Length: 167
Length: 252
Image 1: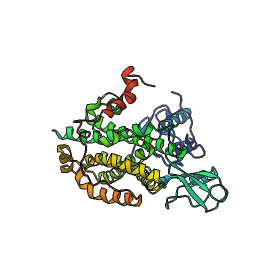
Image 2: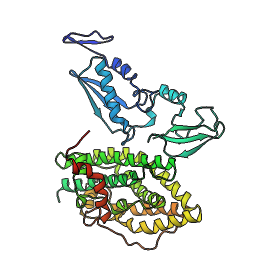
Image 3: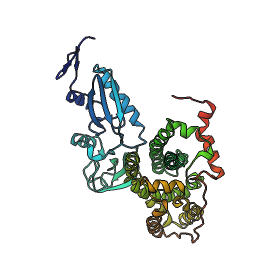
Image 4: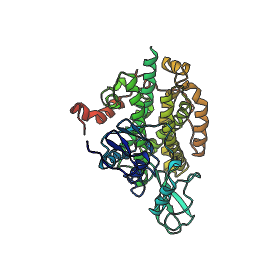
């Protein structure tokens, strides 16, 4: 097999294996299928990336147990890595420790708000409207467009918005 | 009964509760009174089906390599181990919400105990599921209070729902040989030990909802040991399982 030169790569036999740092940055370009402004790394569901001989093992922790995006995310991760020339990928699902919104990256939280989704707050509700910044907000429903979000509205600008629930 | 068999029965009880209730709640999809409730019910159903995949996958593993799908689609009514409460028909929206509340209250207490299970796999599933169930309980409690302490009509419907469903509550706290083995192995609590906490939680919410808990402690039983399900379960399964029954092995 012809060796592919990869930045930051490590030569193993006649193959160059991408470094795990490099792989993390590639995965940071894989968008979440439901909320495409943040990556699967921002979301905190990629827990581990490691080489086991020639196999790349990626550990993924689902957000909600019934989230239909989970299988799409695994497929997207595999596709992204194949596009980078890594054919031998194994996605492992791990449920413990359980995913928590504490794992959302700062970058991810900022992107969510820019996109109009209030990021999770320990207080259990959004601190401000992601559209106008007003603190005058009220809950419409515990569940929004996906299991991970609740439906809120701003009583100043009157716009509805999604709130990413804290779990 | 071997310890593997008891463990399998315990896992089926957990997984069948979430499967059958998840299916029942999903029947509301496209029919709820308002859009927000439709979405909330569908999301609750989705969480429950997701939890089912974890419980039944583990049950299948203990049962010699069956998949969660094998257990969900290829068993008949007498093999199911869910409590009768979750298989009763939806009724009106009020009864559906009351059933959800009565189940969520038990579910949240049970999962809280299972987080400390001596079996790591059980503890991991419980930790994951309990986060979701905390939201289910918050929502069903709020809605029970809103409708119970609402208009004359909503109050009457919620009281009727409570009167109808209360005789199905006791089964969640019944204890048999399976439970004794699970408790001895510290895998799961004795269900009877959850009753005080349950009564306190449910009593507080129902009082706030201005509803009266029936005096009677009579309990319909036969679901969690599979001895006698209601006739409703069979009808539910004909819907849930028809594709695998009509086209065995079909997948997409």
